[in-house]
Each structure stands twice: as C-alpha cells, then as structure tokens.
Image 1 (cartoon, rainbow, N blue to C red):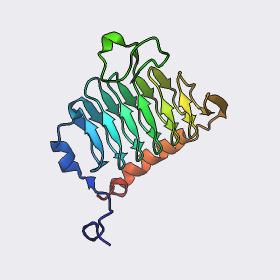
Image 2: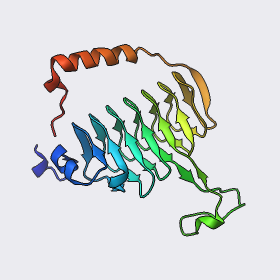
Image 3: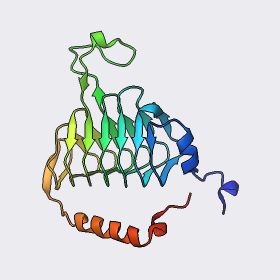
Length: 207
C-alpha cells in the first residue's frame, strides 16, 4: 500500500526539503518525520545519517542543538535545548525520552512555570551531552547539566540527574549502576565504515 492510499502513514521530509527549511546545518541522508514540532531551526545543526521519528517536539528558541552522525531519536521524544544539547555520533534516544537543559525549582523556594519572569525563579540550567554510543531507554528523563559518557546506557523509565561514567549500564529512579557495557561496538563501527566505502549506495535510506 502506498502512502497516498494509507492515511496513517508517516511521511519523512526528503533531503532537498530539509535543506530549504533554515537549519543552521543539515547533513546528508537525514530523515525527519513531518509531524514533528521543531522550534528554532536556525539553532540546530544535524550531521549525516540521522533519523528523527514521529511526534517528537524539539524546542531551541535560544541556545543550540548539535546532532552528530548516525543518531536516532525515536518517536514522542521531547528535547528542550535552550541551554544547549549535544548528541555525539552513534548516540540515541528510545521512545518517549524527555531531555531538559533548563528546569524549575519545585522546592517552594521560588516561583515556577513559563508564565513567571525568570527574576522570580531559581532555574537549574546547563547543557546536556550524549557522548558517542550513549543510549537512553524509553520513558526516561534527563535533567540539566548532565554529561552521559561514551558508551553509557540508561534503562527504561530512569531519571538521570548527574554525569554518567563511560561504558557503564544504569537504570532506575533513583539511578543505580548495573555493571559494565561491552565496547565491541567500537570494532563494529570500524567494520561499518569499511563496508560503506566499498558499497556506499547500500547505506542510503529510501524516503
């Protein structure tokens, strides 16, 4: 069944369309679902071979969002990048992950919510970095000023409030360490790049 006869099909913008939309930078072989909500295109840089799936909301009205190459952001994710968010190569988010580079203080010591001027609020701010091969599981929340180390993984429904060690698995709320994560993907990355050089057409997605 073609997309024209299936009213529920999700359309992805093609490369030529994305080049015209006003992103700060857009790479090759990028797929972004047309039903995403994205604010602040001029503050967003995207590398090559990136997929952003349906119903994501990405807000970068100020600050910046830098997405490297071979990054996947699954459906229903929310990214507030007004203090800066970075995704290094091969990192990604599973469905429904929320990423905040700025959040209110709900202790009662300050006012909160966007209807109140910042003067009366005690905002927690700071950029969020997902280093190479970092992955966050479905339904998790990542709060401001967090650096997720290379190869670190976060299980579903977790709350991330502090920096995470590289090549380590974490899960839960409060977050706890499960153990080491294999780094075999470093070898697979080199093999993948070698295969791409030999047959580049096999690694181009069809829109």
